[in-house]
Image 1 (cartoon, rainbow, N blue to C red):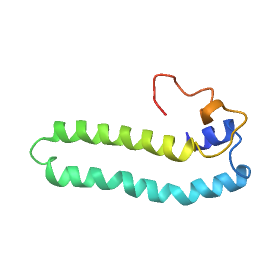
Image 2: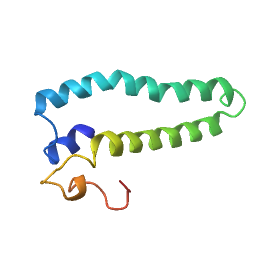
Image 3: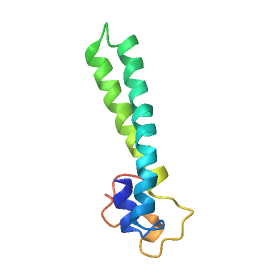
Length: 96
């Protein structure tokens, strides 16, 4: 989603530079997303697996939203293609 947002708003130095940035960020975001799941499994998951799954899904959705709006829609970058640096395909009911 971050790559699509960058491409739609013409952000960055091209597909190669954006791809390298996303390739570097992929392992870091995977680790950051996996740590809460490991903590939930170790604490809440043994006694209440349904609650741990619900909390884990909520945290994953929040983390995905945070990364896409923080990294994918930089408000400091002057994007003439996208008004307010929000791509046209972004749903209006999800805040940026």
